[in-house]
Picture (cartoon, rainbow, N blue to C red):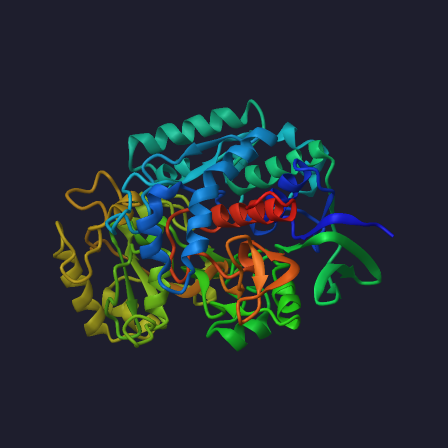
Amino acid sequence: MEEFDVVIVGSGAAGMTAALTAAHHGLTSLVVEKADVYGGSTARSGGGVWAPGPEAAEYLEHVSGAEVAPERRHALLEHGPAMLAFVEDHTPLEFARVPGYPDYHPEAAGGRADGRTREPRPLDARKAGPDLAALAAPYRAAPSGMAVTAADYRWLSLGLRHPRSVLTIARLAADRLRRRRLTMGQALAAGLRAGLRTAGVEVRLGTPMTGLLTENDRVTGIRCGDLVIPARRGVLLAGGGFERNERMRREHQEVGSAWTVGATGNTGDGIRAGAELGAALDLMDEAWWGPSIPLTGGAYFCLAERNLPGSLIVDGTGRRFANEAAPYVDAVHVMLGRVDGVKHLPAWLVTDQAYRDRYLFAGRGPRTPLPRRWFDAGVAHRAGTLAGLAERIGVPPEALTATVERFNGFTDRDEDFGRGDSAYDRYYGDPRQRPNPCLGPLHKPPFYAFALVPGDLGTKGGLRTDERARVLRPGGAAIPGLYAAGNTGASVMGRGYAGAGATLGPAMTFGYLAALDLAGLLP
């Protein structure tokens, strides 16, 4: 029978960081992954990492709220920078600041308009070695194999509107002719896997965990079908959230699994296994929400589309209900009625032809025709007048017309919802649109409406953990030998979102801390 010091369930950033840490501190470890590819939601992500030092304490307290124990916030900020340094030392990864990408609430106490997000530098695909073929696919591949970073995406979203956009396209096109490079979550996942190969850690694909082994209330290993894998020190559950589990989502949330972009294998296996042992659960009604367009090929998670001038969002009344450019979790909280007690669904992103002529939209270049299937499916609508568009989407024509007329009068400041007031709003705005890069009129027909739904990057509720990533019972006692990190554990962000990478930064940090605790290195 095989036996390891540590068994890790899940091959995303949390699990691979933990395995890397364990290996370099003298522990034998095994990573098991239910899918036939590695990387999980990490490989599908933007790859940003939010893991600042203690200087962010006041800000993180503001974002996470009273539901998160201060010890967990302190652990993230105390150990996040050391985790990143460790990963850089033991993998081919290097991290760089994303220039100017603000914290999501930069005007809050302790927030920063210049941001704290870091992302992997482009990684030569050859460094992934024999594991490149088993890397999970990205959420959306860049056009023509371009190595697009998060910093690049800001400029690409502007289409041909800005000189820097044109220069970025030219640079990326020239670079792809020289060599293949991985960026964003692809680089992060491949780089961590390369570090594990160098450290001699096996990642066993196509091996779903079907249960936990216990002895005298201590977790002693896992079961994978008929295979039993003992773990002398403990088990880390890092197999993602439950976004792809329709039953769990209907039980805990008001949306199903159709609009997520999380990895298909994220069906809450680790959360259910921990709960069966009596673990406490937190934040099960929450997710890493974001307004999304339910395209025929799957949900499209909107980032820049909502911030750019010449667009607005209305609900079924034909009226605006929020700052369209707000951080995406906050935007969906409003859509779901968690802010004002009123649900704002259905919702529609309304634009005009000038917007389509200027900007990238859902991966489509400026002026390029939109797929007929979008219109056939009722996801997109088009009309020569606002009244005609209103009839197509089932909202009062007079309300939509009045809403657009009022919005068109805002040039300096959005007097209704403050769109463009925050540095975060402006990051994905149009710098050439002055004085407010997020505001511009809708006046050129035809007019368009795109359905918006409460999508997500994954769920953020799960097993309650402490500052060492140990899984806790309702009374606060740790379950011996059981740890959780990533979206298997309830988020240290609470119901908020500190900034780009506030999923991966804590996931990696608490994976790192779990391994250090298993190695007996935490005081």
